[in-house]
Amino acid sequence: MGCRSQTSTPVKKQEDGNTLLWQVSGNGLKKPSYLFGTFHLLCKDDIHFSQQLQNSVKESDEIYMELDLDDPSTMLSGLLYMNMKDGKKLKDLYSPSDYKKVESYFNDTLHSPLMLLERMKPYFLVALLYPKMMNCKTSSGVEEELVKLAKEDKKEIQGLETMEFQASVFDSIPYDWQAKELLKNIDSFSEYKKEFDTMIIQYKNQELNAMEKALSKSEFGSDSKYEDLLLTNRNKNWVKQLKDIMKKESVFVAVGAGHLAGDKGLISLLRKEGYTVVPVYNK
Image 1 (spheres, rainbow, N blue to C red):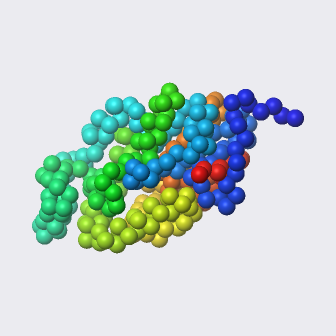
Image 2 (cartoon, rainbow, N blue to C red):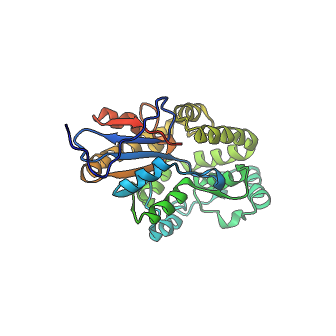
Image 3 (cartoon, rainbow, N blue to C red):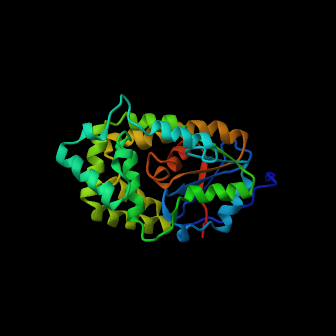
């Protein structure tokens, strides 16, 4: 009989695959690691961590997220990299009438004066619309709550990417295309809200495949011509890093749920590398 590592406990599988939590083992790993799909913004009351998830965090040596969220310099560099390059401003990307429309939406509906956000990449401005889509007063990010959990367990948090890299991804997507997306979000706000509500339900039901299908069909998902930049290349890059990291230690990897499913998602890519990736009961 093979000896089981003392700290890892057998997990209960989620047979129908509807789960956000996956265990990665085999392929020479001494201890299993875990994958968990997050959602960047939810009503705070909707964020619950199952006992199995808490155990998985406890058993892991370190937590890996897209960014190192407990490092203050991550947030500070975020402020630096949010701006467009070459002194570009939003005004340069719109006709006067479209600019007026965006400006009054930010000023009147979001109560965020656009003059303070003039230089910001339009893609980051889209994120400011999300709280408006929430059906509650108090929202939080799943990552944010996970950081608290990790701190209770005195776990170190690492980032798979730097803020500088993430900003460079958005620099390679033309600003005028991003500006169109922002305007589209404002013009079709109620349609986007409906899609957002559906995605939240799918996320709460842990239906990764349904989320992936919805994203690929959605106006809300990124234009397919930029999918390589936003999803595929990043997933490949993460798998390359994780192959080295998981050899040395057991890690709990928490990234946006949209990165897990599909042919080019982390689950599929890790399986192609020879790992056993199983859905874990997470209720």
